Figure 1 (tube, rainbow, N blue to C red):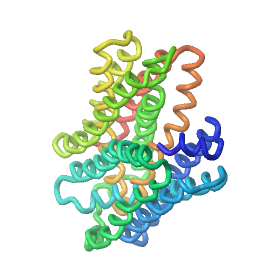
Figure 2 (figure 1 turned 120 degrees about the horizontal axis):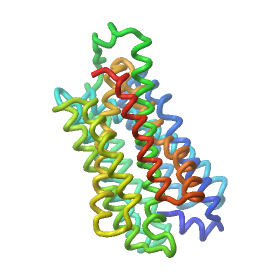
Figure 3 (figure 1 turned 135 degrees about the horizontal axis):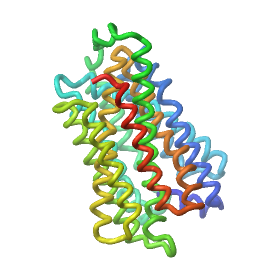
Length: 351
């Protein structure tokens, strides 16, 4: 939301904005496994609180920057803080649950999705009223939450949960299962990131139509959030592997049909189904990894989220190149067909 204002002040080109956003994404994705491991070793409570405060404080400085170099530095540091928080939050949600771990982890991710939905509205109101001048006040909620987290998390995660079945499973089998989960995460992260970026260009290729693009993107993101929550709840009932398998299977025709049919009222139903199906597999893949490495839950969560976030950087290059050469409908169809590889990988994931 701040990029247009910063572009005007600092004279940023679209390419420079692309570099800045890439630095943010790269820093947040690559730092997650390390900080997940660190949380396993030293505890999560103060690390979670500190990273929330750091995120809020650094983002509060972004509206005040006077050079592109400083902007990139702030975004890189804030991205690392974002990456440091997510593994702690995902692991805490699992450790704090009693029986329904899927619902607990799904609630954590639902909070993130709701934040993505609400933040542009709040930021837009502040920017409309004062431009960048009053944007730093949006750091206050983060600082307040950071102060409450250590109190709310007392006693959570002190006892490490272990799974005797995993200790008895051969290490080679476990490594293959982990690799299979990460392939599934990579493919689903590619689908989410590419649709998120290229949907506006797909629905209005000739002349930008903000109303059409905004409405169909909102449907996709809204149903993705609902799917991420319902996937965790369903995982408690029917199992994580089953949720991932069924959603991956149904995702193939949903994306392909949306890509190949002409745009019409049915497109909203298809993109809603696509968002829900991608989202419904997100929480179960995190739960899979947490179950494989219960004594390294933070590191496992960080690896899954890092691969999921990082998939967009690689996948969007592929989607953009194929879309430029053959059209986005072909690129989306290839994206759908690639999910078959994820289905094949399920055979190496224990029930």
